[in-house]
Amino acid sequence: MSGTALIVAGGARPDPLVVNALPRVDFCVAADSGADNALAVGLAVDAVVGDMDSISADTLNTLRLRDVEMEEHPTRKDSTDLELAMVRALAEKPERLMVIGIGGGRLDHELANMAVLASEETGTVRVEGLVGSARVTVIRGSMAITGVLGETVSLLPVLGDAEGVTTEGLEYELTDEPLLATTARGVSNRFVAREAKVSVRRGVLLAIQPHGLKVRSTG
Image 1 (cartoon, rainbow, N blue to C red):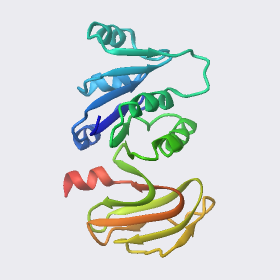
Image 2: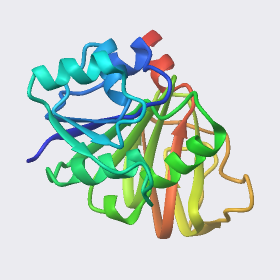
Image 3: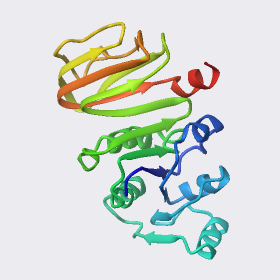
Image 4: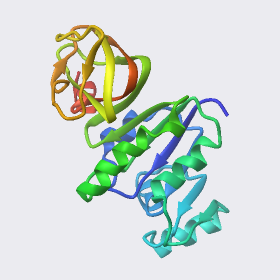
């Protein structure tokens, strides 16, 4: 499959900004109670993955009547429902993977979810997360991100230090420089062009546009 795969996680229900920002979705996977979120905002679900310990009975019955694929796992497991949903989504071989519903819950879950977005399994796919009014893009190698002039973007290393970071189109430029996981040097940069290019020689970055969905909806 080419195109976009969507994962709906079981965090806070996505708000209209998130739903309106979604591109055409070619395959949708719900992570357990993410199915409740998906139905609540009118998204069609192709598969549900997880231990099914938090999905509502009504949603479960509705999806079974629709003959939606159900992939059930034991409650005692080494992977989270989001990780399992990511494996299922990547099996469709998408070009782009979007994840919603990963915010608004426990802090430990949210931090773990950010790390999952950057996992090695997603290395050949463009990965984005939409969280509240924020857009999160996983950057490996070289990638372009779009924004509004003056919009804030933070470049945060994840899974360790990032080396050889170079940027174009941002106010505070970097040229083959490190961003260490133990510093906040990459926080609060700004777009000075509508497209910024970010490259990293070694490591993985999260480009976080904290108001990315809001500024586009009002711009």
